[in-house]
Length: 313
Length: 289
Image (cartoon, rainbow over the protein chains, first blue to last red):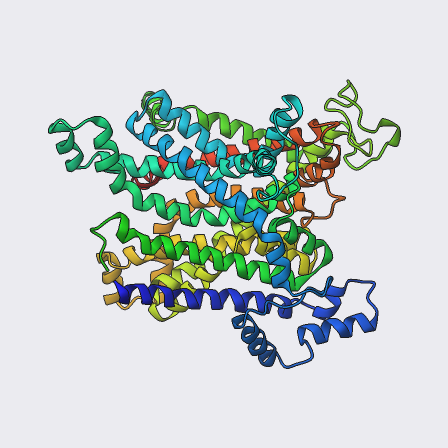
């Protein structure tokens, strides 16, 4: 186990290196002068020079790269071209709304989707199964922002149950935070629920055909015990995997959802940075989100052996 | 004689398809066909010029002249939604073709040449770790938003999924006796890849292509919606919704009609993909359905 653990952690390093190289080269390989691209058409020579020194564009490429990587390893993600503040401070400032919404979304999705998938597999080919599958296809197909606006229209504008937009920190006023977090979390959860429910159903259907499930039923165990103790535990690994890979969808979804609901999180920061052409911020956000994605999947990989004692490394 | 056999064969084939995939893919095919036709014949069927601004007619409710009403510049919403299908479908098809061709070539090489495989798969892992929307946004914001950059920006994050699929098929197919036979006969490597290994990938790739297409259309709409897509002067479903955000309380239809068109389009493609999977590869169905 410890050797596997170390091997697996080390394997994440080349992945992150590829991300770093890609993000680094993206700006340098873009046709034209990178400084001019970032500064826009109205830039003065002074501004261009400032961007060049700020990004070290006057140095040879390999010097730029080693200096940049060195900075990253020391936690220096660069400086915003617009506000001149370190990117890491901007991120620290904006990350909590995103983290809260993401945590609520993941919890909600797992709580809703796993029972949906179990029910669909248990009542295979019944109307419940069809309903779950229909929901799942819809969840994949209806874009996040369309769902968001539908929910706003229904629950905030027509019924008036919830506020339309905005964000209030939970430490400030928890009830107000919760009221504003419901719709964004539901919006984001739609695609995640679709994904997890579909995988739970498929995985459980496979397992329900196994001999040990027949044995469990034959020896007179209650259906609940068969489903949850014997079947679901064995079906859990693919479900965990899809929760990890689905994290990428969640990150993309956050950017859109925060725009729809006017939440001042990392997604808004991304969109603001696009309009401001603040490339150091975009670059750092890609690196950070990729890092989170790789980290989450690493943890999930390592947790397989906890879920399934047969998996030994 | 020939006629009777044909008549006998036909019902068997159709019943086989309806029994296996149900009615939903048929409806999906019809809906998608309608969207494609609307895109092709947009200049003929759209009642108005989609970019003609008529300030007197701002934000009007549906009428005989403007069946879905008008937007904040007095442009006809129906015409804009019809024209919007063009960009979505163009991007969907373009990205699918590019991602499948590039992914197929890289995947074949990766599956067959061990040394290349190690490097290629690390690069693909890295690409997959980057959230596709963020990556596309970064590319578009650097190079500038034209339909071609948007297409390229959406293609890059789609490639790894195709590569992984092709590679896994090649990895299992290369152990087959017919490949060993080809090797022992001295067949050249490009020929083995092209003639013996590539045909194995066609059925799974067809299925994957539908998902790539749906995902590309979705990403394009997200980019447009966030303001990082093709120029706002071009009517796309994402652009129409982005502009309508400010007027959402006043006129939610401005978001719902393009949103509906977009959702129906993606839904149809996904349903056709599921049907293709059921027909082409029953084993894959069992694993992933």
